[in-house]
Image (cartoon, rainbow, N blue to C red; front, top):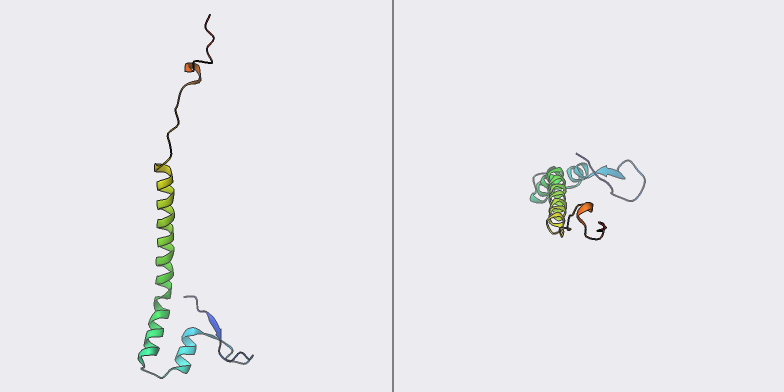
Length: 89
């Protein structure tokens, strides 16, 4: 899973760039509801990204399908059958 880095202090030191899950583990009290909530959000992050990607793909397919369904059918004639192209004597 991709972990984002954040700047905890804004200064360049050992803890300046730390993954979200490590920051939560280091800075929140063990067993709190907030900590467990944030950790569950991070664990589900990948699933949420996949879900939103699938929704976007479905929406794109619906747009393409509707565009094809709503196209006006052009009149199809053979070139030889056209009235102007045949010279009658």
